[in-house]
Length: 140
Image (cartoon, rainbow, N blue to C red; front, side, top):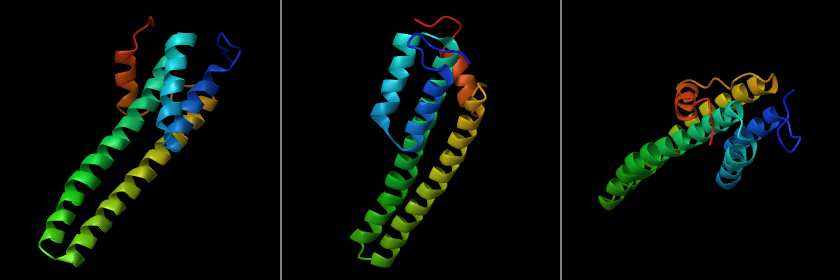
């Protein structure tokens, strides 16, 4: 079990980042990412917390675009036309999409946490490759 400069397990720090994603805690997530980059300066840890950040940003972006912009705009359009049942239907469909994406994010977080508990790479699809490109061998 690899330990960081403060004596904390590197896998535990990475798991903390994914728990913050799971609970939708943006500020603690960025604090963990900052800690990994500034204090620990470990390449493996940095790649794991970047994957957590990518997962969080992806979820937020999908919810913003699909729920708020698309279905929210359609709901407002139907509301302006006094079609209140259609307006409520658009809001409901947007909420269903958000729930489906949250369940997908939940599954990815649990999968990553299980892999990290065995000190393996989180291995998130697409995010793993991006993290390896963004965090090369040497960190700051």
